Image (tube, rainbow, N blue to C red):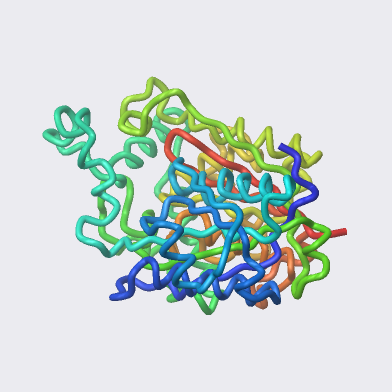
Length: 382
């Protein structure tokens, strides 16, 4: 889908913390106010809302913000990584392009510290309850550990190569004053990280975060008159595999066949670019192996070369293809997808200080949602 007439004009986040007594509604309202203020607008200017799967009803958010009236509301039901990076943005751009709203807020909040955390996602799935859980095949680290072992069997993956993903993102997080994990980590520190599901250590897993993010979408023409340089939505690609969420990560014939290659191809085509034109990338890193797979699928290295790509330093500060410049989900904070998209906007604005990628004009953002995947291309306004 080509989107060169839509832009992200405002961004906002809460602090990313391990646990908070705040509700998701309270955090969402803070992130929304920050996004509106970032664009130089007032609450009264917002007439559209897109929920990316937050538990709170849009009516509650509208009341919390003090919005008097709205003409457009929507929600996307795909998993948050795809929703925040792709389908939520897609709904917002459709609304502003069709004249259904002038300024649309896209938002998402999460509380990983709730009892059970993300593990509760699969507790009600009969296939897992009956067949997988009794043998200990349960929980996202176990699922992605199987992917990592299959990848190692097919292509080779040393401990040092796997570790290089976590070490790369930690290097970026050290440069980000808002990252949840900022203490430096070397190979010795990585090896001290407890093993969760071999070969995945704690350091290979995304953080458990409570937080929220929001971004404001409007037409490019309007965005040019607002407070910050617009991030142009140059292309969105969304692809899916034909399996339910209960089987996609554990029972597929080819566990490594995520739909990222197809979503990236669609996004590049819509934007009129190739992978070689990308200056900086933000890749959904729920686990180190998922980052390796998506880095390959976005075309930054060949299939089977992802581990060696990271180990060579290509994605690190000073590398030829910087990836996850905020620290990503593994060191920056895990508010699925949305904080990656927001980081992409900041890079295009030139706001990242010590973590700024020089000359960043094209950013690819990848969002994994299990059996769905989104790739969005953001560009600096010409």
